[in-house]
Length: 149
Image 1 (spheres, one colour):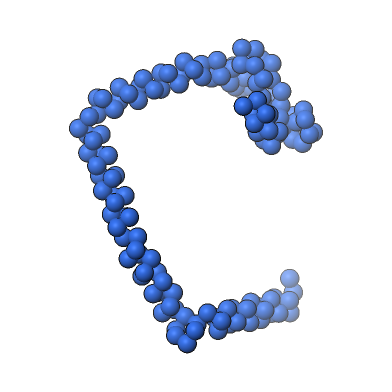
Image 2 (spheres, one colour):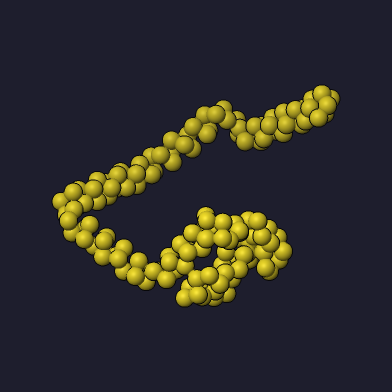
């Protein structure tokens, strides 16, 4: 941008700012008005913030008093999810291993099978066949999962 254009741009911004200021000041100092709005907001929501802090403290206290119980539930949940997602995890790991060892190209070096843009991810249509994948761009991969779910 030339110096002349920059000066014109600054002048336009200055006029717009001044116009906005004059429109919103309503006879009292614009800064004071915004301070009042902020003050009122914090007064109204102070109780909410205290409530959130209190809940956080309560949950921390519960965790400290029932650590074993919480950890047991968490490990059971993790185990359930691992069993449910095991084929998915296994398939992803097999592809990752092949890419790292150079037996398979990285997805970003291929074209998307749907739209011919650069691919970013591999898609498994069936996790029981872990090596049957197709390279897809992020958009097409998302659409594929939306269609299947």
